Image 1 (tube, rainbow over the protein chains, first blue to last red):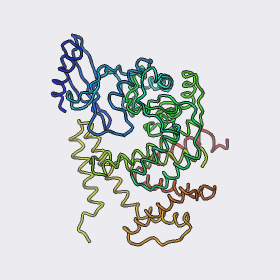
Image 2 (tube, rainbow over the protein chains, first blue to last red; image 1 turned 120 degrees about the vertical axis):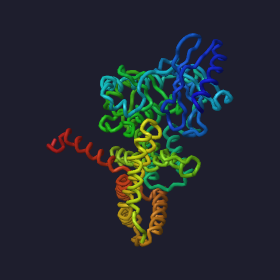
Image 3 (cartoon, helix red, strand yellow; image 1 turned 180 degrees about the vertical axis):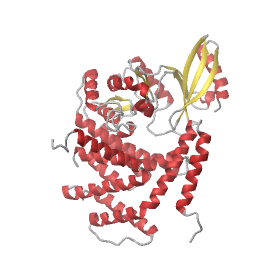
Image 4 (cartoon, each protein chain N blue to C red; image 1 turned 90 degrees about the vertical axis):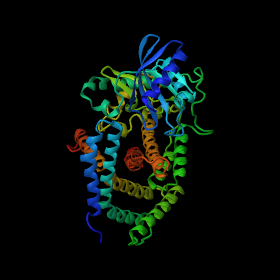
Length: 338
Length: 150
């Protein structure tokens, strides 16, 4: 879709829904994920200049478990109302006649959301010192969101008789079966995962993709938590382990929390903000399981290319990146005890 | 058998084209530039695979002989060798599923094999990743005083 088309159709739409004249002054593409279309919109709404972000579906979706735009919008509203730092969601449109696919608009938040830059830019040095604490605070708030009050019944939940650990393992097995891959490292890791599964005591809302590359950061630190499409009901430990995975450290391997901090101060801060106790071993386990899942997802992504459905060099390359996560998952098993 | 350029030289030619001609051309389009980098990187993977694959197939086969407790010769035809390796990996998966490697000793041998196989994959896919990890371990051992006897 060209910026001109977006400009004309969106100003008509905004004039209609806001009940006041809306003009779009600028439409620029934003670097988004492989599956979402993102645009920076500058508009005059009711004589007020505003900067908004348009998030729109592309014909293909990244993962089957992903939320729809409508669900993501509602989840972001719930997060916003619960005091989580999030770009304020503004307008949701499920009518595909407007922009050919469902979309929503949210406030633009100034800052950097490219993980590598957040970890490496010299001007973000002070921000990085604050980040682990701020991440812990946001995670504690996310895990406390009342899903009943906010009517988030649409969130994926573990299937019947499965706790979040069992659900994650089963999803890995299902994905491999679908790919018809016989892979000894995955086979071993899944079996190890089953035999060493920790008890899951608390099921809460989890963001589902909470990592350094999904935060908007400026010199003052964390400004917003972005990309809510993988929100689901899970174990809070899942998310604490996930954001420690090596692949999100961008070369700062020794700083386990997203390449910006050590793990212990981060976990203690989370305990302070959430008022709950964190089992360190369970966090280790989820970091391992996160690597196992991401390693399998890489294979699924490569298959989108290999199957001929979506010829794309970036998707193809993920097949060979999987080994990095496999190595990490094996090393974590070794640390926890083979 | 074939006229030059050799396979290695063909890949190198495409690599130079991507790096010197396409790269500067797409520099201002972040998405295209990123995909060009990826394409260049995939060529480098192919080059390393040409160097390493015979050796890796051989070492993986030998470890599987040991692990599956049957000494079989590696087929000399490289297509057959790859197919045979795939079948043996299916067999290994089956053994893992049925618990034959659950006991401590067979599990330890299996784990060593999986780690070695993953290392071999990374030598082709991303040797820098392995370097970074081993440097990290070296500095950690230094800082925790393991070399000083602490």
